[in-house]
Length: 428
Ligand SMILES: Cc1cc2nc3c(=O)[nH]c(=O)nc-3n(C[C@H](O)[C@H](O)[C@H](O)COP(=O)(O)OP(=O)(O)OC[C@H]3O[C@@H](n4cnc5c(N)ncnc54)[C@H](O)[C@@H]3O)c2cc1C
Image 1: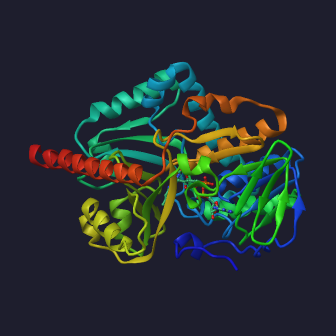
Image 2 (image 1 turned 180 degrees about the vertical axis):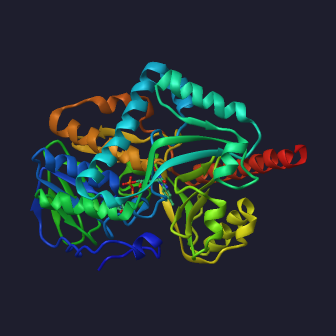
Image 3 (image 1 turned 135 degrees about the vertical axis):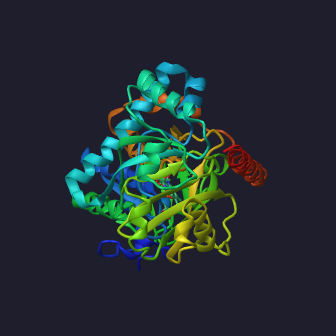
């Protein structure tokens, strides 16, 4: 039985048959744990190379962040490119940037190959909520100069002709970015893996790992899978399965909701179907789907089901577009992102036969595509491009103290955002 949160994506998902639970022991080349986009892309790339692959999913395909995110496919990482340059230097940062662009193009190519309808909206605006247009111009120039990447700059007048909110002052527009239905993309990728001979089992939780020089095995409650390699792609949904996950992955929640039909007023206020996100530390992100708004925002290390997501998002919408009032929501949900302290993905081998492919944070749609290719080509073809991320291996990330530090840091940043905007209102 397919299990999904009550999201708009789950309500509009394409029809695919359930997959069975694994209840007998089997052998394979690579056992992938977790059928999010990291695990699925890795599986797809491996079966394309002729490997015998098994994917284990504790719930249903893309039950985690991959099936419930905002759907924006754009280049970059959760960590800003300026910080990456500071850490690894411009030359390596350029290579990392290019890998992230290749991740975007990989998803575009798969969509062109599988079903063009999976691509829903073209383009993305990154808007600034304070009147400091020079920072956007600098971003635009640096992206062109250092990374050969073109962004269009919009001043207040041009921006507000497209998105009519007095909260916004300037923006950059990325014409290469696009938005997808991420759950349907993942479901289609799973179907393609099976067409090529890969085996996927749902409702099959990996419970223990054996990794000695002689033996590599995953155990579930009913079966054992003998294999040559294991790939951990469980992200924030299981960071207890192995000590390496426990010490590195920090689960961070973020919220989303879909409004009811907002009528013609919406088209008056937002004249574009492109994705919009603001530049605050944990800002809003949204896009129009018909006469409705798919809106997300905020982060928290708390995963309480009692958080009133619909109410919080209705208030956030009201702040940006007061004319919309506090819209009713048809669906509201939250998802967990896997973060590390350094905010970069974890892609590396460890133990005797193990690979970690996790921690894509809030920038996972291009980077899971990148990671799946890197790990598959490392396992199958000894490609060592994953080493470009070597500077970002295995930080200490989990634990209650770190979670508390992140939550306090978040509140601090929210206060800074509020203060910046308040000063803004006073000064204009
Ligand atoms: C609300 C939200 C909005 C976002 N918006 C964007 C966006 O617009 N653009 C963008 O680029 N990124 C976005 N992200 C981030 C992106 O969704 C993630 O980085 C990415 O999907 C992570 O993929 P993953 O495969 O690593 O993890 P997940 O998709 O979380 O998959 C992990 C899977 O492992 C399974 N699992 C866990 N433990 C076990 C086990 N023991 N045995 C078997 N299976 C197991 C889980 O059930 C789950 O299906 C967003 C995330 C959220 C939550």
